Amino acid sequence: MRAWSERVRQDGARIAFVPTMGYFHEGHLALMRKAKELADKLVVSIFVNPIQFGPQEDFAAYPRDLNRDARLAEEIGVDVLFVPEAQKMYPSGFQTYVEVSELSKPLCGARRPGHFRGVATVCLKLFNIVKPHLAVFGLKDYQQFLVIRRLVEDLNLGIEIVGHPIVREEDGLAMSSRNTYLSPEERKSATCLYKALCLAQEKVKEGAREAPPLKKEIEAFILSYPYTRIDYVEFCHPETLEPVKEISSPTLLALAVFVGRARLIDNALIKPL
Ligand code: PAF
Image (cartoon, rainbow, N blue to C red):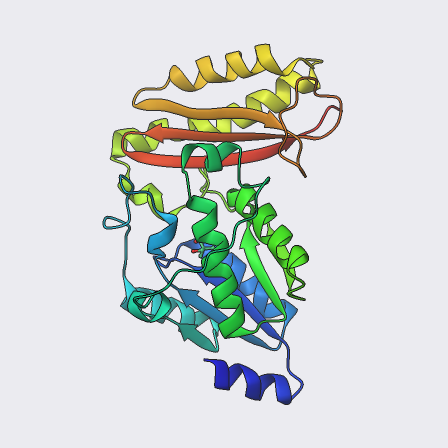
C-alpha cells in the first residue's frame, strides 16, 4: 500500500481516501463517488477496527461481505481496496494510541468509552499507510468527522477532510450497515429518528427556542414508536459539541437511539429561520 502511494505521489497524482468498515451501502458508494471527483486516484479501506468497539458491543456481529464489497468497489472504479488484517494493524506489543480530548467527550464518546480513541488511532494509522491528500467522511457520524478534522489539524497531517451529507433511504432512515440488524417491524420504527429531526426543525421554525422542553418533546416522540430506547437526544454547538440551551443560531441535534438491538445515530443542523 505504501509503495503504491509513494509511486502515485511521485507521479504528481492526488490520492483520495475513504476509510470504511465494509458491508457497503449506498452511503459508502456516495462517499467513494465524491472522493473520485476530488482526486486522481481513490483508495478505500475495509477494516472492522476492534479497538473502537466496547467489550459488550457488536464487533463480532458486525456485518461483513468482502466479495460483494470488492465487486461494488470495482464498479465504482476504486483504484485500491486496502483490507489490512487485525494482526498486522495491532501486532502484539502495540501500545500507542491517540486521543482528541475534548471533542471525544460528549455524545457517543460519553456512551462508548474509548470509542473515539480507537477511531482516531486507526485513522491516523490508515492515513500514515495510505498517505492520502484528502479523505471523505460521512456526516451521519458527525462527531467522528469533527474528531478526525481536529486530529488532522492538531497533528499537522496536511490531509483535507471532506464531510459528505447523510445519505438516506426513501423514508428518511439514514443509511448504515447496522440497519441490517433491524427486523421488518423495527425497520418501520427506525424512521422515528429522521421524523424526530424534522419535528425539531418544524418546532424551531414555529418559534421554539428553549432546548430543554424541545428535547423532552423529541424524546417522547421517539419513545412513542415501538422497540425504541433512547441513548441520547442532545442539542449542541455544531463546532464544539457543547450543550446548547437556547437555539438562537444553527444548532446540531444529535440522536442515538436503540431500535431493538441496533444502535442508530442521526443528526441535523437545526436552523432558527
Ligand atoms: O466510520 C467508520 O466506518 C469507522 O469509524 C472508520 C472511520 C472507518 C474507522 O474505523
